[in-house]
Length: 176
Image (cartoon, rainbow, N blue to C red; front, side, top):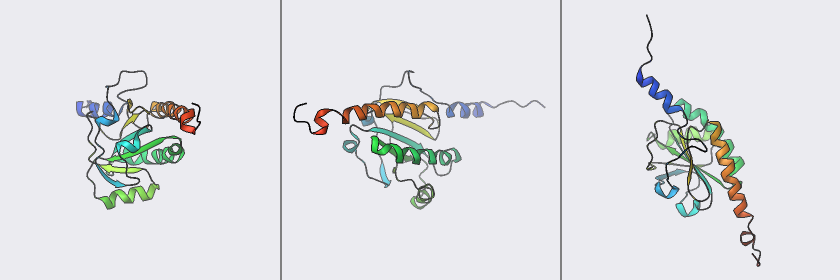
């Protein structure tokens, strides 16, 4: 008997692919077009506190294996890149009880901000799904967090953060 790949499985596979890569046309959205939702864990953030930082909003869920598999990568990035200007917001998307979310965060020693009910003008086709915003708050990536372009785009955006923080007026130089 021949097995036929059902369209729903094909759609799921395509949803897991990166929807936008560096150099590809992205929708023209800014971080300010998103609503940060209900704060659950980590540092509470506001749009004002994120201004000038590189921001990752990672839609994920406790009950989905690929999301949990991506957690160690996010934790590592947070520890390494937070001092360099990166802010990660884990956007829990399955309305899981707080205690279950905390179990996962504790298990992975995650310290980044976690919230739920983040509102996005962009419909993503599955989780995990990441949105990356540069220091100007412009969307520069959307797609799967394990896509090789994900980290490349973040590192490129962080160079702008470092350039801005090295500017004379940021260092307190009276003669900018």
